[in-house]
Amino acid sequence: MLSGGPQGITNGSPPGVDFSNLGPCDSEREPNDDRRDANQLAPARCGALSASDTIDYLTFSIKSTSSSLALKFAGDIRLRVEVRGASAIVINDDNDDTTLPFIKDEDYIVGVTAKKPMTSLTGWRVEVIEK
Image 1 (cartoon, rainbow, N blue to C red):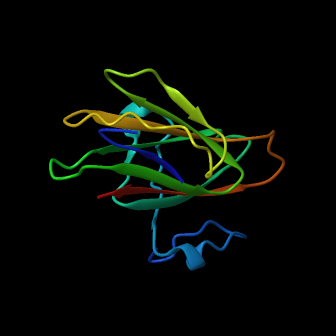
Image 2: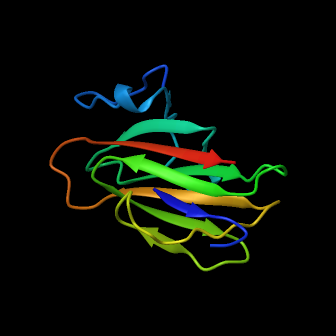
Image 3: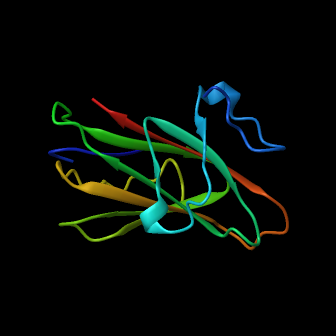
């Protein structure tokens, strides 16, 4: 799990992938292959990438009452996290110890891509956790 802070599923699983043990998530809604069409990540989304759909975008903003932020994800994916005021971060593993930027009042954009070339669907699940 990746986290950041001041310091420091109706089961929408795609075909052939079962993330139900991770809790409920809303299924992605196409199109979300462009930043302008990013799906709201509140708190979790599930989806699938394919050879013709190689990137999905999600967006969220930190709540004004939050003091910490974490992203959890599952699937053979990587995340690229962007927010104005910070450098983009690429995350390859859910247990990566990279600290996420913690910037309130800005929209975060999360690009979801497969780690390796796809020959079939690559299922994914992403969850934002705020405390």
